[in-house]
Length: 437
Image 1 (cartoon, rainbow, N blue to C red):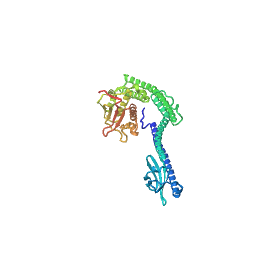
Image 2 (image 1 turned 60 degrees about the vertical axis):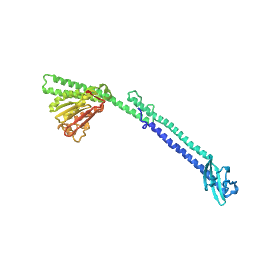
Image 3 (image 1 turned 60 degrees about the horizontal axis):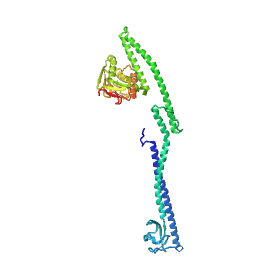
Image 4 (image 1 turned 180 degrees about the vertical axis):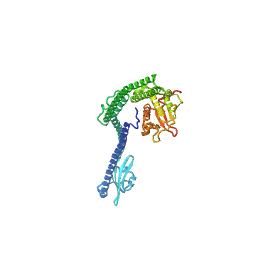
């Protein structure tokens, strides 16, 4: 996986070292150069003033010379007088620096009642050292930059090596490849502590998955068999000629409830298995599923005096396990029929969604419409939800929400004023296909 260079930890370490090198290197070299230059200037100035003090107090003790261009000035110097320009002696009293023809001189001038005195010293060598110092500062800055780059890359590689090893092992684990313990070969430092924590977490997850698989196997065996017995018994009762119409109706309801329980168990196992459900997916004709469910719910709608209407605006398909689609639509349609108090329920299929709308009493005003967990029984006076806000309808919609999260679908439940409740199952473009196209 490629990282953004601006967010890379290696990049941050390199930038920090290079920035520190660029800042501290020239700053330190410049400070040393400045202090050295200042010290040399003070030494030269101190020496010139000392000589000037001595020749003004005792001029007869020194071999002073008078330049032809300024005979009134007595000069102490070891330079040739004919090389000194006349402008040099016209400078005011004090310490001066004069540069001419590649030569640099320091001159100290003072006027006394006995006349004017001057001390001249050649400081060309010192100026040459200063220029060499400037070059050395520049070269030092470049060397500092190179050293900072080298150290930063070396340190970054050394620090990030265990982290990259851990990341590579996590990637292999995600791909399903065999991976040793994450902490193997990693030093006992902060990254090692992280690796050991990941090992403990992986162990806990593996234990949980193992318990989940065992539970799934137990549920599959312990619930499927009794449900099969119930279904077979109900079918025999329904087919018995001595069965009264009332008993036959009860047997039909038992079969319907047993089948719904069987489907619920299958869906819960489907969600629990997660990645292992891919082989169970197929292309489902949602129009056909809706038609089958409406035929199945027709007796219930007739008993409750509810008009079941359908509107197929598209031939909608979805790639998913059939049991998941059946359970989701069965819960949404069943809730509209059993808990809405409506006289009409309409199922509409569009390009990317299925809408189940009723004209019932709607959701309670104190509940958030967008959360299926709160959309429980609404209008049944004797229902548990009428008393405490809980009920089986909410569990069914909670299962719908978990299915949508598992397969990347969306579920939206709202209650427009004076309309009832509208549940919209949205299918993303990656999971659906319009069969009419």
